[in-house]
Image (tube, rainbow, N blue to C red):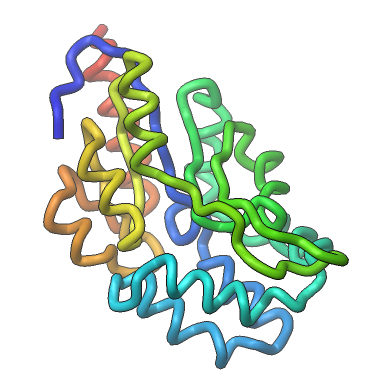
Length: 212
């Protein structure tokens, strides 16, 4: 991790399990009666036992036959950490969400958080997902913000957050829904397991940047 210095802060949040109270793919699967196909693969992917690209592709394949519109409507109501959502809305210009999830499924959550979202892109046909066109690159998002002169605080929980957290100025491993991936625990600057503690830490980081 690098030093924050006097650069302006940017917060980059993972979505699933960091801002949402449930992993979204199991949430979809449970609603449509497909939970048995998804739960174990999600756990293994988040933990890093299965490469994110492979695990995500397998889960998308299992859910791709579902109506994109129905899934998008469902996920507008996925439970979120309301305190974190309020923090992001209150600092919308300084916050970014970076998620490997598909834009066609989760873009409606922009209305919940009110900030810019970077998402993966799907290949679509007749209201169905038939493949993954592009996976989001969280590390590149962090580095782009740094190149623009910002100090980046990255908050995430899964194995696919490791590369981004490694290059961030401050890394926060979030264990709000499940234990963070071991790879994050090896490199994070902070570990939080409760929403209130995370909100306190975010406020402290802002105060350090702008002492009274």
